[in-house]
Amino acid sequence: MSGPRVVVVGGGLAAVRTAQALHDLGHRGELLILSAESEPPYDRPPLSKNHLLGTLPDDALRLLPPTGYADLGADLRLDSQVVALDPAVRTVTLAGGTAVPYDRLVIATGAGARQLPALRDRPGAFALRTAEDSRRLAAVVREGRPVAVVGGGFIGLEVAATARTRDCPVTVVEAQPAPLLGAVGPEVAAWLQARHVARGVDFRCGTTATGAADAPGGGERLHLADGSTVDADAVVVGVGVVRDLDWLAAAGLEVDGGLVCDEAGRTNLPDVFGAGDVVCHRTERGPVLIGHWTAAGDSARRAAHAVLDLEQPSLPDDGFFWSDQYDLRLQFVGRIAPDAEFTVVDGDLESDSFVAHYRSGGRTTGVFAANNPRGFLRSRVELRKARPTVAEVAG
Ligand SMILES: Cc1cc2nc3c(=O)[nH]c(=O)nc-3n(C[C@H](O)[C@H](O)[C@H](O)COP(=O)(O)OP(=O)(O)OC[C@H]3O[C@@H](n4cnc5c(N)ncnc54)[C@H](O)[C@@H]3O)c2cc1C
Image (cartoon, rainbow, N blue to C red; front, top):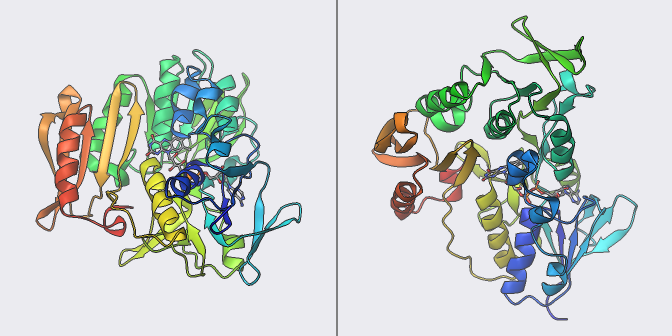
């Protein structure tokens, strides 16, 4: 064994990508992955799509085959939640009290689903962050049975689309006047909402869920702030994520909604790095948090380079993400400034195949595409030429 003893805390994409990058970069020292989960790391995007639909088995979710960790020289320890960090003696402590020493530490603890206090104790209310969440929900989202979705974000809308595929009557409750307004702007939000309505989704926008009780016919009766109710077998709560930062802050790490890191994943403590959804970047717009698959993998590669004191790799840094809803492949890159001007540059919204640019300050800052991967790629390459930083494009 040569090289520092690297401990990665987390059991998701960022943890696995960190281990892979360290191995690829020639690290042959000890490598330990401490995951709070009971099952080996898996991919989350399918949890609201084909895994929830039941067409993708658990095995196909795994990020690496069973032998993959040994191949990387990594020791994966499941059921190993880290609860404390002592930077003075360079140890992390597991929930059972065991102290684990490190030379370099990577925090890749991601995020958890935000709960709605009003629905916290309801048996028919579901979060969707883990494979177990998806399995539990799949057992309730049965052919033709009603589903309510609280929160019209990407995950909520993906669940709505999946449930419609099973012929479930679906109601989406969204506090804003339209779903995804902040993320994609009013033009795309209206277009996407119309596509869901055309497939039978009922929207209750501009209102919130205030509580739930047993529905007379079984399941949940969801109460909304506008006085109306929705009966459903399952209420899926998709209202964003929270990061578990207390133990990080207690160790002296800077946190601001996420673990504050520079663009290479370095924290304010020596030899402690961050990767994936847990990370936040400080910008003049305030803290920027990124919660997307590609960014999580890229930040892991950056952190791995920093761990090994290597020059940073050249990665796009462009805030890319995608979403699949029905037969729509949605892709986005960059960011939308509050004063952004929206222009369709290829195709049209009516045909469900288009590329649109968001322009601000005389330049394109964001690109959205539906069912037009080639056009999207062209625009993405153009956008990338401006060499935006993570902090400029994300959030
Ligand atoms: C349902 C769903 C659908 C998604 N779809 C898309 C999509 O279509 N496109 C897209 O771009 N992105 C999508 N995403 C987002 C993407 O999956 C995330 O950005 C990515 O999973 C982030 O990886 P991560 O490793 O940083 O965090 P996570 O995946 O959250 O993994 C963190 C891991 O760390 C573990 N952990 C936490 N705390 C501790 C601790 N103290 N000790 C030990 N282990 C700990 C957790 O148990 C977890 O296993 C989706 C996410 C979800 C939930």
